Length: 194
Image 1 (cartoon, one colour):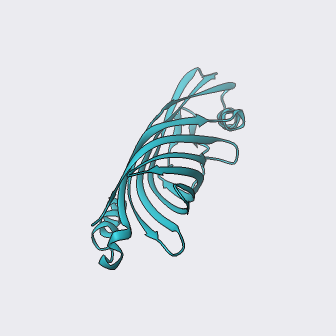
Image 2 (image 1 turned 45 degrees about the horizontal axis):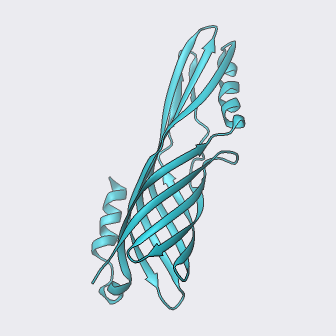
Image 3 (image 1 turned 60 degrees about the vertical axis):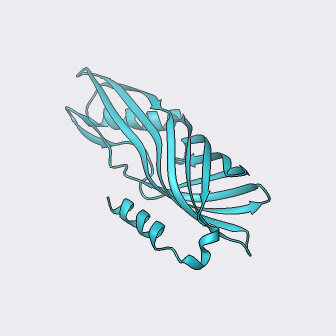
């Protein structure tokens, strides 16, 4: 809720002097998660440390992604700043254990806020930013709970945009952990303020 209030505060109270450089945008697309075996093994090790004889973890995902945000262009520097509310899908962890036999599920939504800096190079922009998500997701079992291996505070991302008219294509690489990443492919629309 606090994130929405901050977003709307920025949207409605931006300085009118820069209004020709302020825009809102919306993107839709797909996410491609690459959860590495090291992160799955980390979950398996934590489960066996809790007292299970063995554990095997698999990953599935919901790949629909979208984001809505506001941006401002600093024309002299050819730099843009964007803030957005994001939903990049969901990672679904399923762990199967023995002694005792359990099937344990944990869903990790990749939802939150993002801040990006864009460097314009004609119709192409290179971008780098940070994502903040609520990742306080635990895997709950009969022997205890453990956290999923998603970085806690801020998740870095880098990408590239191609803008044609008011439309843009976007690719971003997001670093969920030191080993696992996700790729985002999106199509968006930009609406400039008058």
